[in-house]
Image (tube, rainbow over all chains, first blue to last red; front, top):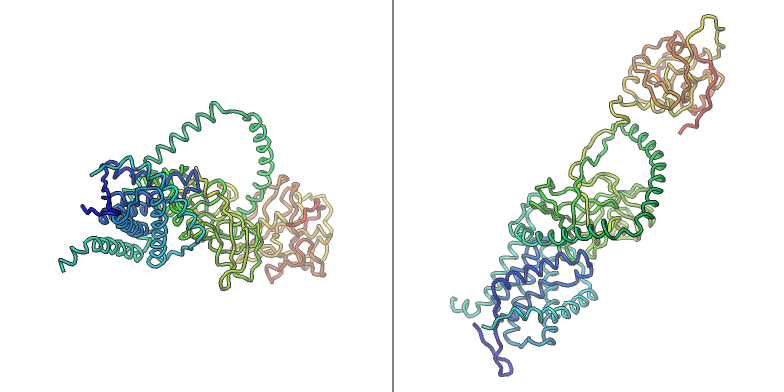
Length: 172
Length: 446
């Protein structure tokens, strides 16, 4: 298990119980599919991405992060009408990046969680758009106001959600 | 090499995972969507997520129904009164529409048009969505077990919703019309311009492939054209909200969908369509164009049985010739559509014998006072004219039929507008005697 230090302080590595590791992503995907039916505005959020970032940062293992991202991304892809792998690739990159960053930085406080989510949401969207347009040929339109709005909304939600998910953390 | 891989283990795994997914993507994109079987991971994901969605929707609707059906009944009486008034109004409207529809069916039957009928639908409840703004699709609680197959049309009472993209065992994925990968054959209701309805990345709906030199007004309704072989013709799609010049030679027509795609709860899946030639009445023989025209155009009633004591009818310079066999058998309607059995020059005071020719091709149907058609005449009677045939028919109040004669003395033929064409160039050596009864008040030809 890689142990790294920031500010001469040991960063803790967490693990999760198997039910939490399986159910939390499933519930996130479920809510993402169900809530927009009733509250259309909810589709600006990306709950599965927030869960990927949370697990990646908490585990601080790039391999675990990218595998979690790939699994949740493919699960999310399965519910769309698009080919499998669009969300998979984007979330793999996001998971790998978040866990790599988590190894180097302390991302336990609200401010750093906000910034990390803001950054990785943007990265996720860029990768998604690149793959969708470059590989699949979808004609997606990039809208800066919408992307920035979504990024901030997700970052705010991440602060609240991560605080709730902290309850599932188990010290190694 | 091994040392290098172990040193950059994380990056190596990342590259491998990404490469595998890119490869998978490429394979999926390359394959035709037609023969793409549903991936196992999709089945697993749908099986994992949809039962929970079903349970929540079911309990939600159960509680809602209990509350609204048994407890919260405020304003129901008022609503009931209003609905009754609405029913009365619709009944009156229905009578008028029935007549129009019947006429349209008759004409379609005559022309051999095939009409698509929705013969079976399956109601379904919306239980989930794709959860992504880039993919606009929903999940319904009916699947292949209920008879749903890919490419079935999904509608609501308001209009078109989309089509079934994938059918799982107990659920199905429906691609909405505002998804950018969807396409619906559509036609503008008034201008009859055809185009393809597509979704945009922003979730709007546009009508493509309408040439920029055409005139399209905002507010015009858009209906399905039936050309995509998925949606039956004539289903409401939406209303034109904005028209602007688009790329190349086409207009950019923005359409507001008739169905509220963001608030779908229940939908109907069209599980069976029939394509058949519409019939005016069950079991009735198909009517010919001449029959239809004969009903529509003014004429005189048939002669009563000959009275041996009656004085001979007055004559004029008109003469009736029978229609030839070929055109009668083909059922091609001539200009006036009248028949040898129903010459009606008398309505213009030109009855009698002369050198006029009939323009009709078949025997005229008998029309009673109620306006219903009794197809008494037939082709054979038209081809073998009997001089007494018109005389043996009883006189009944009937819808007037157009005169089908051409006067030798350049007399016009009234309702036929002088466009009557001789059905046969050969004059009948034994001209038929015309009825001389006064005509009934004429309805204007439609």
